[in-house]
Amino acid sequence: MRAAGFEATVHDVADLQAIKAANGVPASLQSCHTARVGGYVVEGHVPAADVRRLLAERPRARGLAVPGMPPSSPGMDIPGTPYEVVLFGTSGNDRVWARH
Image (cartoon, rainbow, N blue to C red; front, side, top):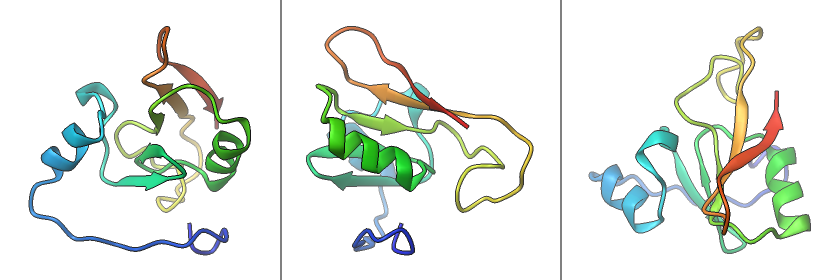
């Protein structure tokens, strides 16, 4: 995210589940990292372009998530495995925000 122009402060914490629960990340969408940016939660290996779109469009939602750790997601960089970015915490249902 830093390489994409985002400022990032890393906090190593002992209880990740408490952080995810406090930020409203459903168990089905959890991954390895939880971040907050512009009033949203970003869970997992979400591409920077999707975060920029989130901040530009400002949908009514809690945030974006890439569940698990897809091998082709940013930071994993093993091409060939499609994955989805999910917009969650919407007033209706969670939905696919982007496909990669």
